[in-house]
Image (cartoon, rainbow, N blue to C red; front, side):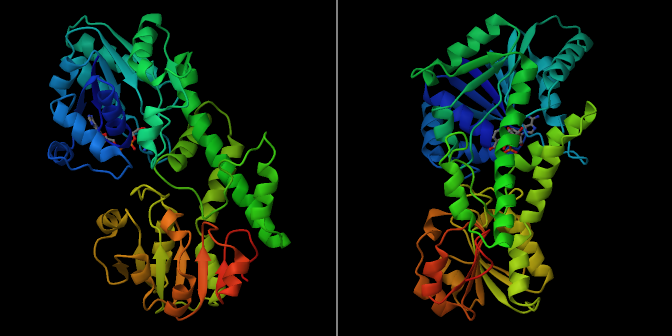
Length: 443
Ligand code: NAD
């Protein structure tokens, strides 16, 4: 099938590459010229496991094209995906200007019936706004072309995006038109062989499903962080509590890890956007407000431990920081807990020697060159000459480090672990003070 994808970010690029891989003819459109020219030269703008060969092979085969030419894109696809960003507006609600700009572009250039499929995460009622924008633009131009608008939210996880798109848990199709549904079922048939993963529903429910999913996951994290904070005050170990509750199949072990807060481009923004949408219909989303407040406080936790340990006297110290990305297997730094810590440490006069397997270029791009940020080539070199160690991201490479080396390298044998990677007893045996989340303040 001929497909066009507007927006070549995490969602658009991965989805486009996966659709091309199964044989569809995919054209990707982005307004970012450098992104498009880099992709044409085989330079992939994001780190995502398995993505580089997938994009390069499908580009070489001609099934995947990149251009800034929106007119060519509208002409190319019978199915037009919108996968542009929906960043938070000033008040936290989702900013739809990019989504509506694509709708206007589509209406301007379309010459035949098009199915417009929204993959961006958008508030309930956005499909109506997209329809209105398409209709208004067509009328303005005196055109009589017809269209369908479908909601098809994306559930990929950064760090596992290719696999998630190749083997989706579910394919949500929100449409009121059986013909459009049937076209999309055909499009997704290659991903739907094992069992039927399509869940078709009305458009508004599809739009809300995406927010409900992300807000539920964010709620699990904030709930567990609240229990961790209580465990700390009660002298309990949240890791025992986690295993204890996870054994109940109604709760399960998934996604109940305490830590230094959730980040990324989705959870913080989607929780906020649903709170704002709820406001708009006169409902106070109190659970979600609490989820957000707990997360905000949790991102300050590591800094609090550090200040407590050093009695507030940290000016002039050097910290080794392991992990910058908001989670492992991505270079994405959006809303990363590491950023809250970095910025607080700098204000307090601390120099940071940081290492991350993938996110250092992005860190450099965000913060530029500064004397109090040194990006190091390895986790070991980040330790050299540092006073203490902090861990913000649970990369596999940090799970079994050389504890002797950590002890020898640091001027103070103290580790602040925002991801509960190590056993407190083992750290004690190595002679390291160990602060983790919800496991007792220090051993
Ligand atoms: P992104 O910021 O990585 O990419 C968006 C791209 O859209 C950018 O390259 C931008 O230049 C391009 N763009 C903006 N306006 C355009 C236009 N008029 N025409 C063509 N391109 C345009 O965003 P993302 O992370 O891929 O997220 C996209 C949407 O998908 C968001 O709504 C997000 O909430 C949702 N989502 C993201 C993820 C994720 O893990 N990143 C997962 C599921 C859903």
